[in-house]
Length: 479
Image 1: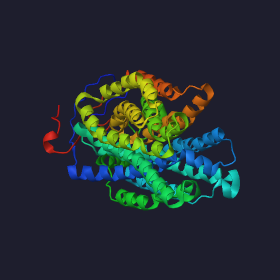
Image 2: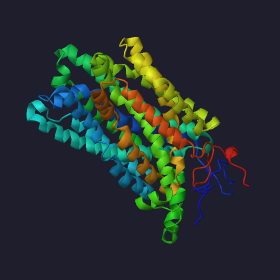
Image 3: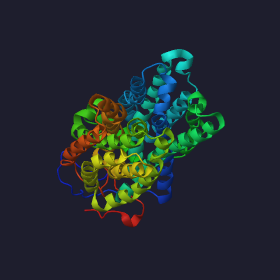
Image 4: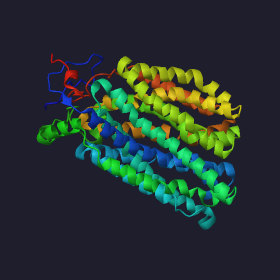
C-alpha cells in the first residue's frame, strides 16, 4: 500500500524528520483560515454549552435537587456534569472511525447539531419543584446526548485542524481551536453573569432559581444555528481526501498487519496502543487542569472560599480570555522549539505553582481570587496550546480520527470531566481544601512520565501524509 509523505514507523525512536519524495499538498492561507474559523466557531458552541452547566452548578443544585441535603445535592448536580463523560468514549468509538470513513466534515456537522439541540432542551426541563427528584432523569439524559456529541467533537476538530495546517505552522493554526473552546467557556460565564444581574434586577434575588437559569441554555438555539451555518461551509481536509482516494482503491488488499492502514477499533488499539497511552496521559493532565479552572472553579469559589455566585461566575472570564489569546503565541513558539518543550514547561509550572495558587485563592478577596486564577491558567495554557497539534500527530491519517476518539475520550471521561465531582468529593472526604491542587499535580507527574518516550513532531509531515505547505517555496527538497 502506498502512503503519502514520510510515513514514520510508529516504533521508530528517531526524532529526525524522514526525507520525502512526494509532491506536497498546497493549501491556500485563505482556505486554511476559513476551515479553522468554521471549526473553532463550532467548538465555541460545544464548550459554551458545557460552560453554562459548570457555572450554574450551585443554582442547578437547588433547581433539580430541592429537598435533598445540600452537600448530597451538590454531588448529584456535579455527577450530572460527570455523567456526560460516561458516553464520551462511546461517541468516540462510533464517531471517530465513522469520521475516518466518511470524512471529518460530515461528523463535525453532526456533533454540532446534537450539542445545540441538547443544550437548548435543558432550558425547558421541569424542575424538582414540579415533578420531584425525577427532574434529574431528563437532565442526565440530555447530558448523555451532549457527551456523545462531544465524543466526536474535539477528536474530530483536532484531527481536522491539524490536517489542514501547514507543517511549519501547525502549532500556530491548531492552537486557534482551543481559542474557540475557552472563549466559549468565557462566554458561558459571561452570559450566566449578565442574566443573573438582569433577572435579579427585574424580579428579585430568587429570579435565577425561578426562571433565570433557563435563559443561558435557551441562548444555545440561535448560537447553535450560527455555528451550524459555519460548519456547513467548511471544506474537507486535503490530507483526508488524498489518503481516502488511495484507501478506497486499495482497501481490499490492505493487510491487517499494516499499522498505516485503516482499521476498526480493535485494530487501532492493537497497532497504536503505545501512542494511545501517551495521548491519554497528556490529555488527562491537560483536561484535569482545564476543567478545574473552568467547570469546577465556580463551585469551589462559592463552597470553599465563600464568594458570591456572581463573582464566582465572572471571576474566570478575564482569565479565560487572556488564556485564550495566549494560545496562538504559545502554539507559534512550539513550531520553533518543539511540542515537547512546551509540554515540559506545563508540567514543571503545575508542580511549582498549584499549591501556592490555591493558598492565595483562599484569601477570598477579588484581587486574590483573580491573581490565583491567573496562576492556575499559566500552566494550563501551555498544555492547551499544543494539544491540537501534538496529539493527532501521534497517529497515521488512515486511523487518526478513530485513534483520537478512543484516546482522548477515555482520558477525558475517566480523569478530565470527573474532575469537579472528584475534587469536591476529596474535599468532603478529607476536609482538606487543597485536594484539587494535589489532584492536578498528580496528573502532571503522569504527563511527565509519558513525555519521555514521546517523539517530537513539530515541523514534520503528519504520519502517513504528504507534506502540507501554504506556499510553493515552503515545499521540502526531495531527498
